[in-house]
Length: 135
Image (tube, rainbow, N blue to C red; front, side):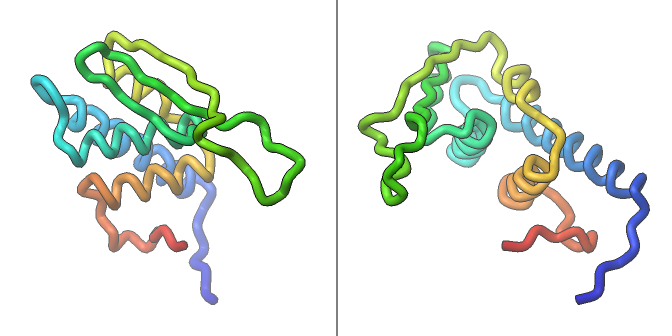
């Protein structure tokens, strides 16, 4: 497999570009009167699930309230990782959804890959730049 030579500065620039694009997508997704489109509701939910490492997320756009279900700590049973019925619930209120989502944008390889996936799925991210996310 051939890997092209990439200068360290180029990698940092790509990370900044992806972060700026995810921030732009967040801004666009938060421009709604009462409720975002189904697509953007899914984006918000997936974004928060990733950030909080949650089992499930529910966003109440009317009450500006986010319910987060996280699994209990892993058990000693290697087959049983978590059970949604035993999940620990946390609640978070927000005053500005865009600021809350933007505040969750972080640096890191895992985050970079996740943001690219979100941009491919929900945004207008160019897929021919040679930096393709693979499974």
